[in-house]
Length: 233
Image (cartoon, rainbow, N blue to C red; front, side, top):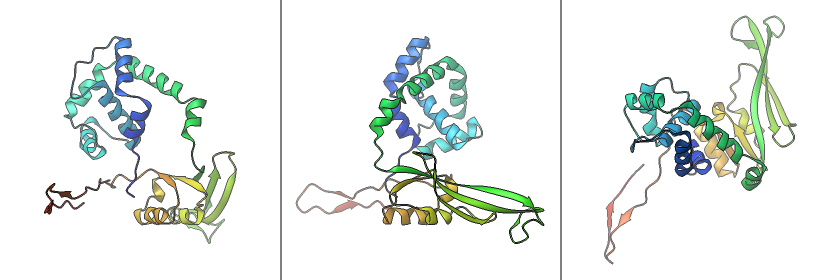
């Protein structure tokens, strides 16, 4: 679990601050801010859409956890009102132009993507008395591993509708593929198991998961140096 790629890292690789600044000048908006620029606002918008932040006030509380510059919520709301919509519209067009066939070829995924998700089908309570479901219903659930390349299912496992999705990811795991799953499968012990057994995966982590970067011990430069600082994460 030491290697992680966040949405801000992906955004920086697709749209650089210099490109954003060129678009801002092209639209005619003058960005006078230094600590909270249009690029920072773009990062805030992306994280707000991804994490479904509820308000400007709550957004700045989550921003520090995501590695974003911390500002007062009033500054966030004021900046959001100042920057014209046409700026982000042009940035979106620029991003779409970059996601062409040439860009997809450069990605060169080492393995094929395997999409894992579930579908619940419910009926009346009396139709399937052996599969009780909340309310006056009964239901079963299909856990599907779908090949992204050709859209064909690779494996399907059926369970009761009330069974949680998480444990089923282990039954659908395939070392020859990169698993793509949602946060329902994101139990840390399960992800550590994937890491130990060489299972590649892409997953959206839960809101209460915090990523910490490990720090190495610092030593003196003299021959008789000793540890002067011990940082424990």
